Structures are given as C-alpha cells and as structure tokens.
Amino acid sequence: MIYRKGWVPVLFRHELERKLKEQGFENWKEICNFLCGEGDDYAESAKMPEQYDNRLWFVPLYSLTIPFQWLIRGRVGFATTSKTAALFSRITGLK
Image (cartoon, rainbow, N blue to C red):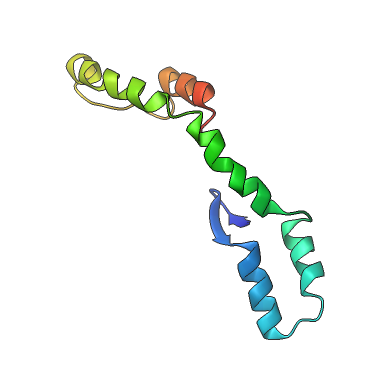
C-alpha cells in the first residue's frame, strides 16, 4: 500500500496497477515495484487477521475493567500518554 501521514491507506497496489494499465503505461510493473516495493504484499496481508486473533484475549479482559474504571475514576478508557495505555500497547502490540 501507499500510505500518507498516520498510516491511512490511500491506494492499494492492485488499484495502482489497474490505473497505470488504463493510462497506457508500458512499464507499469516497474513503476509499481518502485513505488510499492517488490514482492507479494497480498500474502502478508492475508496473515494479518491471524496476528490480530492472537490479541482477542484483551477484549474481554478490558471489558471486565470497565465498571471499576467508572467507579474509581468516573470515566472509562485511558489517555494515550498514560502509563497504563503504554503497558496495554506493549502487551498487545497495537499502537
């Protein structure tokens, strides 16, 4: 994928290839390899759901803490700069 600031997907490789073919570029494959890198990213993206499935244990654990957060702090959730959020980020691997 080609990304902009904040890792928001803007254009997938297959979309770029399709647009370059439509425009009549003869070296569309070289352009795609230069912009997106060589290799098959689709195989890597197919593995992503498995990686996130391994982190699903966190959802029920976090859900159990919601009533205690509300009673103790009067609100639910963590600031992204807090030590607790940093700990959860490190444990789950999510940023």
